[in-house]
Length: 113
Length: 116
Figure 1 (cartoon, each protein chain N blue to C red):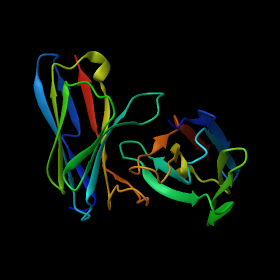
Figure 2 (figure 1 turned 135 degrees about the vertical axis):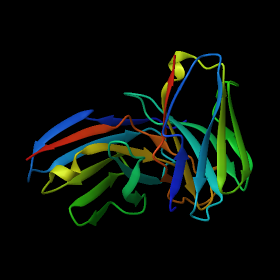
Figure 3 (figure 1 turned 60 degrees about the horizontal axis):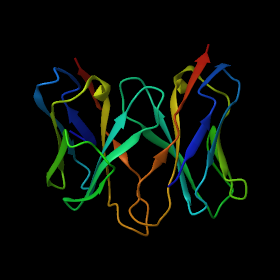
């Protein structure tokens, strides 16, 4: 089955800096890669996703890149703000069978004012 | 109510107790999921229901028993749990979970379970 590795487990940045979180996956059949943000006391919420037919996707301060050959994908947050502080999860899935997600262990992002 | 709701938000139970977690989605979705979230571990998928039928049981011990009476409600019945079952239990829903497509999963806030 699929295995997703996520690094780092904790990331501390100053407000205004950029933050990068990286994930690798094992199943070459995986073709959909969502990123979730989980704030304290809440469930994960989808913030951006990418499909295997594109290499990069941007949404304001957030971007995701995908390297299918190397089987890794990354989340980039620019101009970080304190409200970006949360736990971020990457995930991967393929369209074979039912659409179950395999998650990484999560990265706790701390943005200091 | 909108989105995915879960009750109770917190639950403390002894190993001999029987309790149930409830999830309700107000999004008109047809697939519902139970996940277990433990510290420093990836989210673990437990069960998947599509159109009220269980389509995945991810080797979950029988002390966890799911029930899906309709597409909007999902229960997780708990009995004779162990302390290592203490975790955040998350419910999610999606448009459907059928092959050939991927639909965004919407998560509830979770139930924080502590087993004494």
